[in-house]
Image (cartoon, rainbow, N blue to C red):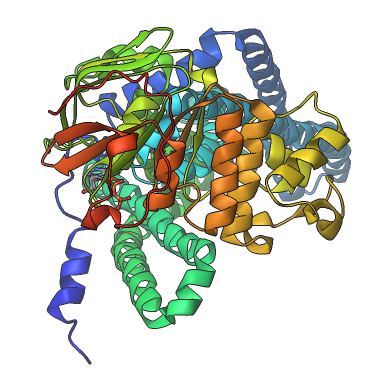
Amino acid sequence: MNKPTSAAAGAHDDTPAPPKKRLRAAPLSLAAWKQFVDVAKPYWLEDQKKKAWFLLLLLIALMLVETKLAVMLNDQAGEMTSALAGKDGDRFWNSVRQCLVILAFAIPVYAFYYYMRDLFANQWRQWLTGRFLDGYLKGRKYYELGSDAEIDNPDQRISEDVNTFTGKSIHFLLIFLGSIMQLVAFSAVLWSISHVLVGVLAVYALLGTVIALYVFGTPLIHLNFWQLRREADFRFSLMRLRENAESIAFYRGEAQERAHIDNKLDKVIHNFSRLIKKQRSLNFFQRTFSQLTLVLPFVILAEGVLSGELEVGRAIQAAGAFTAVLTAVGIIVDNFESLSRFVAGIGRLQALANLMLPEAGAKRGSEDQHPRIEKRPAQHLALEAVTLHPPQSERVLIKELTLAVKPGDALLITGDSGCGKSSLLRAIAGLWHKGSGVIHHPPLEEFFFLPQQPYLQSGTLRSQLIYPSAESSLSDDELLDILSQVHLPHLAERVGGLDAVQDWEKLLSVGEQQRLAFGRVLVHEPSIVILDEATSALDCRNEASLYARLRENGATLISIAHRPAVLRHHTHVLRLTGEGKWEIHEASGYRFDESDVTADNGPAPTTPSLKVVVAG
Ligand SMILES: Nc1ncnc2c1ncn2[C@@H]1O[C@H](COP(=O)(O)OP(=O)(O)OP(=O)(O)O)[C@@H](O)[C@H]1O
């Protein structure tokens, strides 16, 4: 057999590594219980509380009826056995009739109980997922979490972990309640037949639970915790393959992709094989624990039956009750495997809740204490001594930048690749905030941001054009006119009209996508447009006319572009010279240097109202 290479072994090694802060799954303990309460409490104590408690009470009522019917059936099983042993036909048939009547009630109660249980779980899931989605989308947490290494796969947590949480919470709550009822109901039967049986059973169940908790608890929860993460990583690697299918196909990168996916799969399989080994031991223990109960009650009761003190039927009834009570008290042992998976998922969900949900804000307050760039409302955009760092890094991208952009100004940002041009736009848009200084800004609704790669939703052509609004007051003719203005006059006709639904990212070239995104600006008519190489895929003629169209509207521009020809549409140039340094020039006298690509800059505009601050 081949030995694993050291690289493969290394890849596996991180699975069981001692988990870092927040990556830890709480063992089956008070900490796990606290995590559970943190996530579950809002549903039970806030606006859904009436519905939640009503459904729970209904389920408890159904369970009570079910337990009562189960006790009656167990009694009849004993009765039938005794009737047969005593060769008493009337007693036997009477018992059969009673059994059938009980079953006629028990079956619908059983079916309705499970339906209500699943309905309840589904409603809770809908509510909790909605809450997580609120937290995820508000405050742009989906963006921030992308760079948070500790919260892996938030999408999996929201889609799957929430589902498991609500489903399993109700499942376990009900089986615990059911166990208590079963315990009370059958203990009475058992106590009336044999006190010794009750004593033996109590000791047996207690021992079994303690062994399960201490021997299997922590390792199983830990392994399940990692299994969830590994599975999500594996799925994500497949998703990335699908999302980037065309680029990968052009590169012929299948071998690399396969190696990457194999690496993720290896981790899934390696962790799972450790998990099933642990489960094998648990199964061995569980089987021994439950199978012994086949013999145990009979051994204890045999003497009573043999001496004639106890009817055979009573012994059968006692054995049934013994098994029922043991199932009730052995609930943790029996469900240990799924309980450990459930607890592992709670940890993942609570970590996410801590970062996203409003009531958890206080808890995370202490973690989010890096110095921030202050944002202040103002009429015009202005930066005051802004120093900017990337998130989770101390590197200085921009140092003490001060400038003011007046209405009608057009600022071109230039500089070497990687010097921080897009980062500055991120800071203005409020996506990045690590640093110091103040950004004075008009309401964010007045801004429109055009990235290099436009985002196109799945939906109609109309919805692409009016994005991010969901509705627009513009008529079809006005929308078609906008398409013409961005040099896509035949697009609607070509794709089947404004209401045609297509996979736009595949159907349109990048240049067409960029022009469509320009159309969005004309639909919304914002007063400040921020362009991050938004015309990189366009030819010079298209680029020039789109810039001219924006300037005609009187929009204030802040743009990053590498082509010298765009300079003529700007009033000022901010040049980032590296290591946080910067210079501001009036566009009229500015010449692109080597890194900006030297060329004829064309005539300069005549509205230099931007406050010039020489350098930083
Ligand atoms: N999330 C991040 N965390 C840490 N560093 C980052 C992050 N995103 C970008 N950076 C780094 O910040 C630097 C500036 O990136 P930015 O995208 O602003 O460059 P740029 O000037 O726009 O480059 P280009 O012209 O190539 O687009 C780069 O060195 C980049 O590696």
